[in-house]
Image (tube, rainbow, N blue to C red; front, side):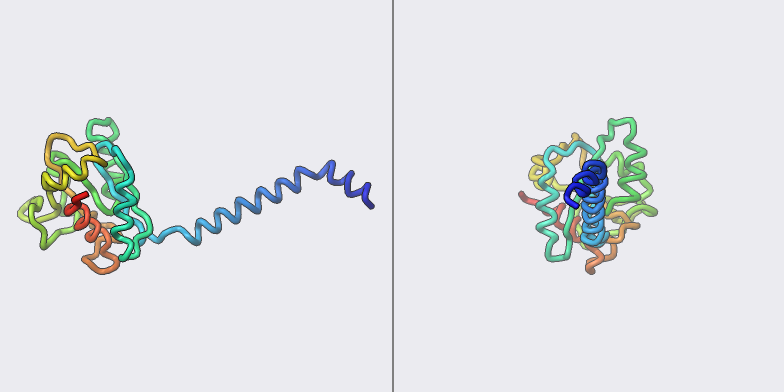
Length: 187
């Protein structure tokens, strides 16, 4: 009996390893699938420029923790990149919750059909007489410059209207709450 096991193991060891690897992969995927944050527990931020330090995402997540946010992710692309307009329209406007762009990019964007109208903010960005974004103050830009490489012009923060996190200040309004946190950031 012992020798038949050794003989069999000699020829079938690859199957044993394969079964273990498959079991580990299935466990990993299942665990990730069932424990991944829901869309309302994630804030995706698009920044038109270069991110110097991604630790601001961790700070944002901690600030939003009481609202149930488990993850903040930052996606960036410089306006000088050839693919910027595509990445901005596909990723920024269609897949993110909050968008931070220079005024020149905001001026080219159809804010009415893209971003949430905002109320109760000062220093708002207006398009067709409606407030769609908040212009970052010099104080906030200075504090955030340790994390983001801002260009020479003013930057505007928007909430994407199609975002699952864009509804008012309710729990599903995490994007608006994140915007409030970001535009009042002091370091």
